[in-house]
Length: 293
Figure 1 (cartoon, rainbow, N blue to C red):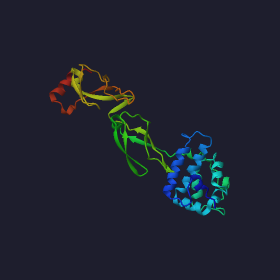
Figure 2 (figure 1 turned 180 degrees about the vertical axis):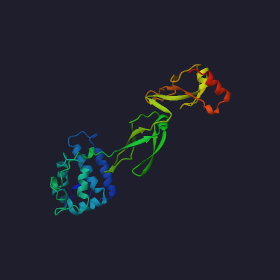
Figure 3 (figure 1 turned 90 degrees about the horizontal axis):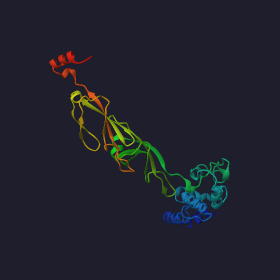
Figure 4 (figure 1 turned 45 degrees about the horizontal axis):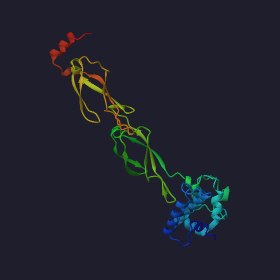
């Protein structure tokens, strides 16, 4: 029985799991295509990853030790990996081979195609995407102010850090929370959806908010208190103000994460009418008589 998998990783058939992992990491660093630009380095890198995919898994290793290269259509592993260079996802191919119960007379599923199994294609081990993509909804206040936010992904509870001023559809990357394979782990990539606010509208770095101002203040002028994300402020209302008037509070909007400059807060004035039932009877009578039609 050939020991081509062990030869690929430069270890003996009796090597421990620790020895296999150490040898894999050393060789993977040596032949990684981002580091090693020599001809053939990328193919060697693919072989190393494929060999580790099998030998790092106790069950797969036992199957390989039992069936040997018959699992690869009778080829040695070196030729199998090189011949598969233009096929689809190798992880899927290896799952088919080592899923158990799928071996035919020569040790693999007789479904036709290369090496006795279906041609599903192979994009290369170095190109396997281990990242997980997901969507996450974030409260409006958290998106503006930033802070921690708790999410549940694949039955796991995670606390993620939200940067202040994050935009809708922006991507957040959570390191090491993706899929794992061949000794590597991908990331969790979150597409952000910002929930609506009952109080604010957002326009880029600017905020828009309705300001319900008492009728008396709108008619005769006065001061009006406003709560903002930065601090509470008091604004001056001119006499005879009209509903729909925009009041700009410079620098009370959202801080731009690139420039550090704050946007503005725009208040849209609306009249807060008094409850007629709570008014003095004589005042109500007077208003009915004197208010213009």
